[in-house]
Amino acid sequence: MRPTSQPAGSDMRILFFHKNFPGRFGFMAAHLAANPEHEVLFASCHQRSGAAVPRVRRVIVKPDAARRPPREENYAQIWCGAMLSGKSRYTFLERLNAEFRPHWVLSSAFGGISFFVPRAFPQAFHVFYAGLEHAPRTAEGLSEAKKAELAMQGMQALQSRLCFAFCEEQRNLFPEVLRPAVRLMTPWVDTDWMRPGISAGFQHGTFTPAPGSELVSFDMQGAAAARASSLLKLAAALLGARPSCRMVLCFGGNPVRGMFEAWHGGLPESLRRRVCLADFLRPGEYRDLFRASAIHVCAEARPSPPPGWLEAMSCGAALMMPAPAADALLKPGENMLPFPSGGWEEQLEAVVEALDQPDRLGAIGAGARRDIVRALSPQVLVPPHVALLLAEYEAFRKENA
Image 1 (tube, one colour):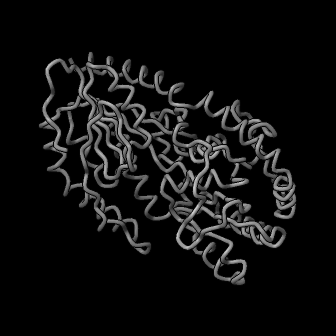
Image 2 (cartoon, one colour):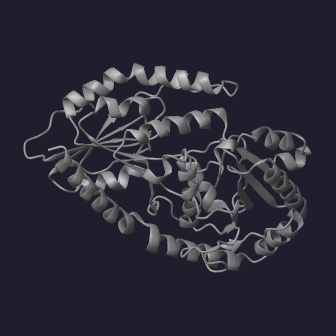
Image 3 (tube, one colour):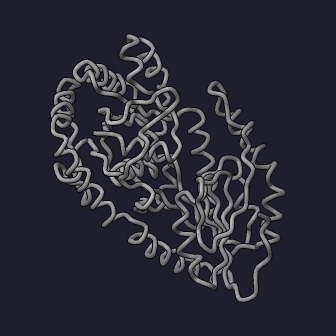
């Protein structure tokens, strides 16, 4: 759809940039579009099937599939490729600015386009939202592609009026000089989409466990080599201890992915077909996984749970993670299960004990769903966040009057 010029009576034009529609921005877009004085346009490459947001128009940004870097590509090649990719779309951005002329631009990491968004809309109030929510705690553990993405985010943050991160680990990945300007915000969860329900079961590639199978999923996306090695010992022991157990290991973007692949390839065929290695999953696949999982194991200790863990809780999964030091949301034994900090033998005992109590797992999953809806639904968190943006925009507008 080609954007049109501002209609009469529209006082504020707001442009969203996100790879996926509606993505994380859908609820903000809906909230802002509910005001008849706002005109909202959403630019994205991809759209969730059947998704629509009332009063929000959409414009397609053609994905640059050719620029998905091969694994061996180094940092400089990725950076230069992203720059060329963004530059090739600059004419599109200029045309969008000429035809829509947004007052606000709210964007997330968007590959090479991130280089050019602030330049293409010089008059706008820019708000940037960081990505890499599944990244390791330090930049040292990042792949070349993730390091390049982080550098692009830093450039866009420098050129934005406001920059937000969803957890402390995200903020700590920015250079120290930028961190004070990066604000922490509580991520809302799409509780209407990520909700318990009966589905066809989790399927990925040739992995199609029978309905009702005992399924345990592991989040290994941020696991360093030593932690990953211990978790793989746990996984192998669990397969041996529970003959009916099926397993999904999620490791998307982890630089030690070769370790997972070698471990999987070394399993006997009878065990290998009970395990799914999942690099990247579509949103619907994640939802099916969380719904089907008896337990979702997240072994990394975090100051606060990243968005993916919260989505698992929203789907009613029994989340097993290191007991939080101080988190008002997470309540061991009520809405999550503590994951032991000892060796894999102790962890195996805890997982098996939990699996032997399906009624307790169901109660914990129900408690997780209840608490996520109460504390993190868009209806609770979006209005105060938008109010903050409106106040900041008013200050920006006065400064630039």
